[in-house]
Image (tube, rainbow, N blue to C red; front, side, top):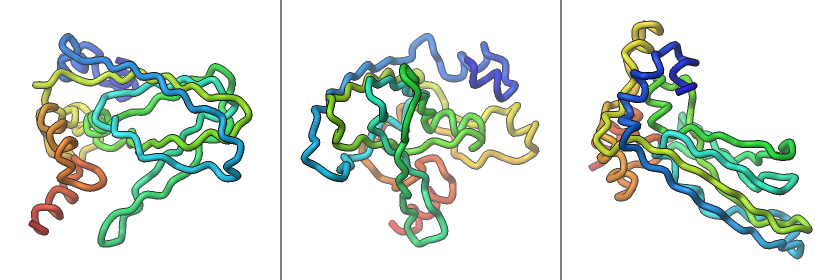
Length: 190
């Protein structure tokens, strides 16, 4: 995997850790009809594909039709700050790294939430997405090589991918699901 090479982690090891021989792929296509009667774009519900390794998006318009958020900490409950992804070159591909990648590299590549918004352009917009997730029994944890090189312990709890899916399904945590601080905060509230 290219991400493993960028973090100076051997590619074959990365594929083994995520059990890529039993990974899943999910293909979606979304059609957004033209709605020029809306003066301002109206955001839709945030996307729920943060649990995958990567999602690759392609679109046909001058705007991607996407917004991303980053989590603002320092408050009792973390909140999202949304920003639009503006002009993208024609035929551009957007790659969204999910939580397993964030955990694997100990936060070097941070994941963001994504959401689409109502199409106010003159032409319909089509977005195509391909999501790739690890094997269900793969243990998602920070790579030992990353911890050794950075000389800091993992900021994330290791979990089986199936457990991550269950947490996302049950929506037991808000914000960053692997963040030890967030997990401990939630446990104190119960």
